[in-house]
Length: 328
Image 1 (cartoon, rainbow, N blue to C red):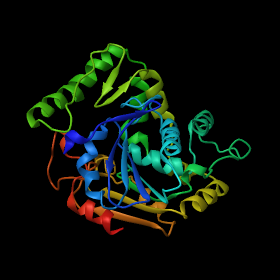
Image 2 (image 1 turned 45 degrees about the vertical axis):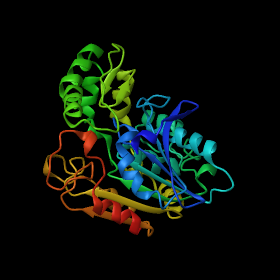
Image 3 (image 1 turned 90 degrees about the vertical axis):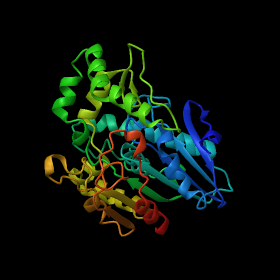
């Protein structure tokens, strides 16, 4: 079955599509940081009876154009919907895992690169005169009536701690390339050979100008680490934002059905044993949010009480997760 799935490209955006059986409704899915779109084939095939077409898009520097920024992912979603939308499509559902989930909910309020730059420069001091256009509901989001967030990251500081990112950006690329290869890429390469995953083969870039982190291939590591050390997710903006901005966010999100999914053993939610995640709380003020928590599942939402070193083989395949989405 996997051999019939072929990657396609439109204006620099890499994606694959699955043909479904339910007309007039489509699903667009975005992967997590460093992941291949092929990681999610097995999961997405569970929903072919719910959609006419299912699309899975590569993120920037994981196969698609632009550099790795959430604002650029928002741009990709906008461009992709412009490309595929037509009068026959009545409903669009969006879904994303980890960073892909952040991109999807950011798209709904048009948290783009322009707004990112303002907030980073102002250290999230929200100036009304500079943020009159934010948040904004885009025309491309009009048909979107449901969004599914798999293990969204409420803060990049959990993934790349600010102090660590600031130190890494000052390191030489060759040093970082060797470091990431030893800690991440070589183990991944070995595990992919042992498990012989049929969907794809993990490879390590030989380009000296590229810093690789799983499937994320960073062309400018200084810019990348500078960005992740200063970027604030929509959840952080909401928590620290002003009342006017938050009310506008509420008005946009309350028109959408939102399903939030994560596991109790998610290492991103419980760094050092202390729960820091507030995503379910921040979104709970929207009456159309459904929070599905799964006992003993981790960030990749697959095996209970099992450590699988090959991340390529443990992406959101748990049957309980799949059932909860179909139910909602």
